[in-house]
Image (cartoon, rainbow, N blue to C red; front, side, top):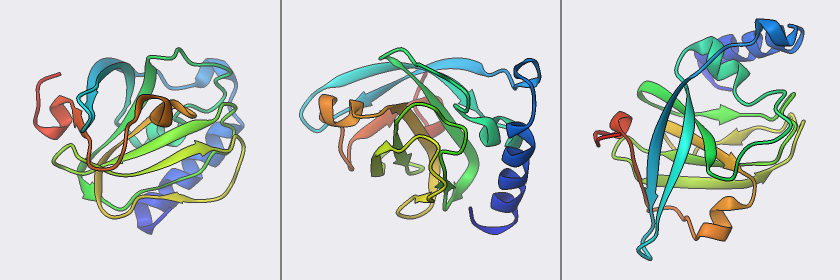
Length: 155
């Protein structure tokens, strides 16, 4: 993680890893659509990780996730992003999204429990986490568009 915010998020993640399940964050829900260059439109029901505590927790401790589910991490302004998989039990595709809703880069099948950094290719406004391998199965690629109000489009 980069900078002060990254340090704060890492510190919060360390604290969260010691908390009992009852103390975990709750998340608002929304939906978004990924529109591919090939004409595909894929809807995901997502939890919104908006606060530093929610972002530090993310999808930690989850043992499964529905095929059409995910988590959308959002920032007030575009910034470089770096994630890890500590205490995350399921493989994830991390989709890094620019302020215009275009996918900048995808890290497919992030390894559960890994402490390796997964980085955005530049400043991003959001990161969509979905089940590992789903991007490849649906043909989601950099340059495709994510439609959600955080990127200036209706939910």
